[in-house]
Amino acid sequence: MAINKSALGVSVVVLGVLAVVLGVVLVFVGPVVIDDQVVKNTVLDPKNEFSYTMWRDVPVPFFMAVYFFHVVNPKEILNGEKPMVEQRGPYVYRKTIQKDNITFHPNNTVSYREYRSYFFEPSMSVGNESDVVTIPNMLVLGASIMMENLPRGLRVLLSATFKAFNEEAFLTKPVGELMWGYDSKLVDFLNKYLPGMLPTSGKFGLFAEFNNSNTGLFTIFTGKDDIRKVHRVDSWNGLTTLSYWRTPQCNMINGTAGQLWPPFMTKESTLPFYSPDACRSLELLYQRQGYFKGVPLYRFNAPKTLFANGTEYPPNEGFCPCRQSGLLNVSSCRHNSPVFISQPHFFNADPVLLDYVLGLHPSEEEHETFIEIHPLTGVPLNVAVRLQLNLYLKKVDGIGETGSISEVVMPMIWFQETGYIDGPVLSTFRNNLVVLPAVMEYAQYGFIGIGLVVLLIGVLLLYKAKTHKNKSEGAASAAHVSTSAGENDPLLQDEMD
Image 1 (cartoon, rainbow, N blue to C red):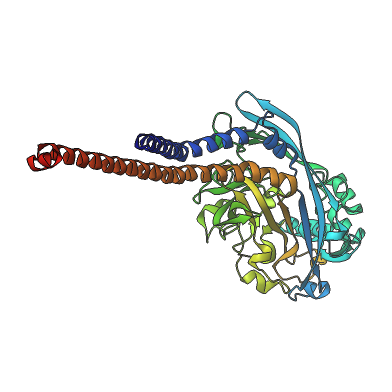
Image 2 (image 1 turned 60 degrees about the vertical axis):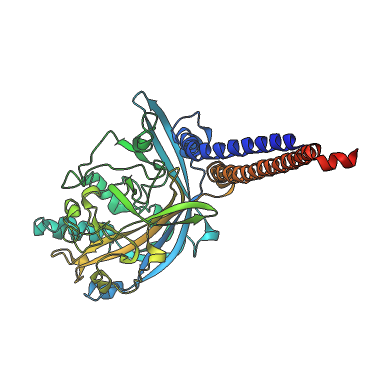
């Protein structure tokens, strides 16, 4: 029986050692296997059905919410008083994205054009596209700034042209027309006699260029030769650098196209991307970690230095001429019109901007730009990109339409593009890239724990078997001694006789 217990104990010890060894091997091999699977599934390749389809078709629902700054006191502004605005909206549009003209190249890059369309969503909006709002007239006030250094006679002629077409400093129209365009005899006149002055040859609207358009020809890396380069922009419209800005650093095209990033992010990582709409590369910084519907994430947000001027943040000197910090002068890529981009309600901007306009209330929760991303794969889980469009206004001598307007950066609209992973896409993502790695992680420590318990049981069995053997051998030895003593004792022998 002791021999059987010993054999059982040895078997149990061997099983325990094997389980511990397997667990230790998984500790080292498991992450390597997971990382290898991440690399295989994040390389841009039509064979990777899930990741390639996600990149090509972008199944995540995106929405653009637009808020108008309705001008309450247009007449008073023309008399030099401080502007007062009232936020209207949101007017929400569902955004569809589709990549086309996808072409893979031998140098591990792929080119494509991304087409976007917008569809009004009444149920998500506060108001309708028929709502009437008043905003600065870019055709009048923008053109006045652009012409202010020309001879006075030309400025007077421009003013006469405005009067001939009944164009005034402020424009009151339905939201839908301001968004997607309206017929303007002035636009037709300018396109005929000053071709190239305006960005459109058809209807004039704030988003007329956006709908049913593409963002340009992007060429990005597939990551086949180096996963750290996946999604990084190689060129845009054939350009590897821009020519809008004053320094090589500001003209660099950095990061990705803004939808996906390379895997294996750390808290030291940043989130760079190139935005054709902002005419420059942007970079978000790590803020904190958290969870989105059970999926671990890193949250990156727009730093205060994003639109800081050159005085406050010297690397941004190349984006000047600058005004107050928090404003990006995009006139160089917007036909020289005096347009500035900022965060909504001048969030993170110089507080003096809030003193020039009444009715603004910046807050981090409502106006901050952020991207929440799964650090292992570089896939965004929750996104909110928020920007504000502003027009620089001032009185221009010779152009009566500008009245006595005080110099001010006037907010016109702000918009946010949001999207988040949900539904079947989220389930597939969570199962493949969260649940399975977690199961493997728990398995490796489970094997180690179970192995140690089994090993302890085996040792106890061996100890008991050895103890039992020693007792048996001790008892047998005692009996043998007793028998031997009896045979050698004369008295005992005589009694037996």
